[in-house]
Image (cartoon, rainbow, N blue to C red; front, side, top):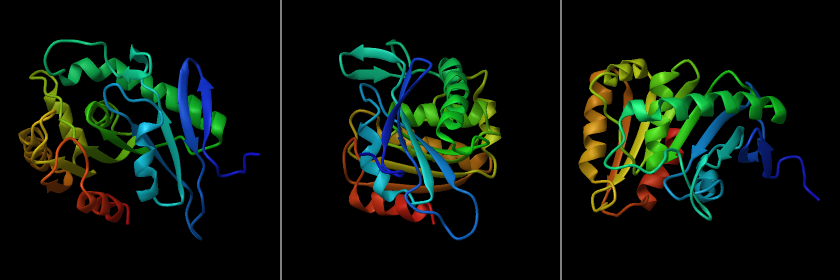
Length: 219
């Protein structure tokens, strides 16, 4: 029998979302919300390894991306050639924001704004959601990802001015080279974002040190 704060699956308007109600409430303040966005070929369960680093007063929503690539693998975008630009993510980000309004209403969670954590392609989605909809996104956590570029709309990253951003990347990452993360740090700092950067000698994953840093970022 499910208790009140156990994770559960929600099916809403064609989306599948894993939801975790707050495990405990702080003595003051309202609960917070975070979206966990998986990478290419992931699903609604793969980001759950990071849930233990998220404070107990958070609602956690981990959606399955809408584009099915393999039987159990999903993507935020249709398959394409090369690195997608920021504009490629605009519709996906808009759909995500609108869907979140439905999920939060159904779950009884706050709907005004949220933090967003993404891994790999999900990190690019997190950046795009914040750039296009800064009024809805508080903090951004980009793990082993890239900052999507687009000459005509990259100026939208000015919307991240003052926002706290945590970037983690492995120096040995062969999927998304570390220079993508280093470039993201420079661009976001140049527009006035408050960036915390953790680089470790690992591949396309998080090191224990950066995972600790992720937990400290919430404090």
